[in-house]
Image (cartoon, rainbow, N blue to C red; front, side, top):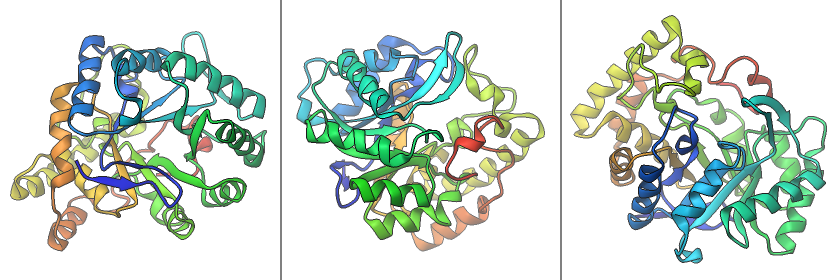
Length: 331
């Protein structure tokens, strides 16, 4: 497994990270034993970056990772944790909380659930519009100084917020959606990250499965699968978007790889400062994703990929309308 460094202030991590959200019901029911086995398989393959959120399954995901990582060398992996999203019973969205006292409270719970004495990269999941980012980052800096956190991260914020946060404490990386069908970061956010020496961890590299090559119209992960309310998976939008996937499939076939591998490799090819997160929740999907880090895309390959999926060609917002205002960039 190749490694990449998350910006000038961040840690060295595997060139492909493991996103654990899908193991806690976001895409329908997941098998706990298979989830644990997938984490083990990722570690054995050299994956060292594992991403979670304290609100994934309302703590379920952190407890699952604690089980999967029990007995493992703590220096052998890096935990990236998002915090601050609020929800009530029934997963009713309640906004974001970035107050300094809340930061420390969220962190204490995460350390306990994960069974660790520190978190490698700690980041607010979304910007709290009622709290200046300087105050939220200041609290994380205190926790870094105290040894409970190693690095500061951000998630889904715009270029101006990145600059403000970085002025308080060096930011290791920004986690944000980046894929062939979600390229808004390229206009202002990515240039800002590179100017400041900040890395990018890309989630949604397969568009939540939409451009994995395995999705079909009318498909569903079952009860709890939030993609049922996603504009890109709805109505005529999904038919249009799947036509893009078929064009991409032809490029993948010529390259001798799968659609998913091509889509992941494209993200990785956008810069050595970018680490894609594979949201695999089974060993089968992980095994498919891993070779993407070794896939060498030529200049002609990149041209053919862009022809298959031109910038802005996907239809539908990447989140339901209620969630779009909380994002740093659009689609």
